[in-house]
Image (cartoon, rainbow, N blue to C red; front, side, top):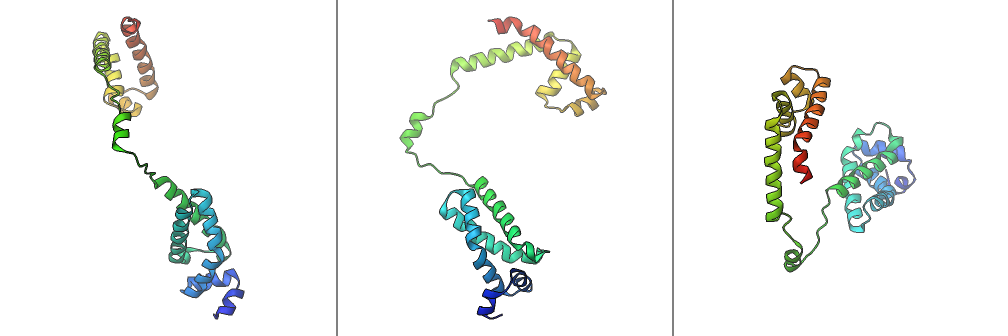
Length: 188
């Protein structure tokens, strides 16, 4: 096609020509849709430079994948969905870097764990272990399997050879019994 006829060509004929490898036809499609692609990317990302990059990436991807487009009349909506997906992917993967002075970091970074909080945590662990020791074997095994070993209800069902509903009930009952064993510690 000549330049004059490219400007006058229908979108569908340009898409068909581009699918057959006509780079000029794709160039005309890109010229027609570049602003819409950029506007969509800018709306999603809120950043001019990022939107320009996404616009370029979308048009390159569209050129590579145009052969997969089944309905030439759907080119605009197809390009719109490609733009949305690529902008969302970029927004999700983008990490915002914040420049901070080392002194600021040192002044704001505090240790959340203190000797007192470590002692309280250790005491709680000991009390829970003691409470588990005072439970019956089935209650203890059920709680350990779920909370310590991280088994799913289905895995527990297979291991205990009991239905999932029974495992749920056992967990409920065992938690209540452990809570009863730990009442004195919690009251302190």
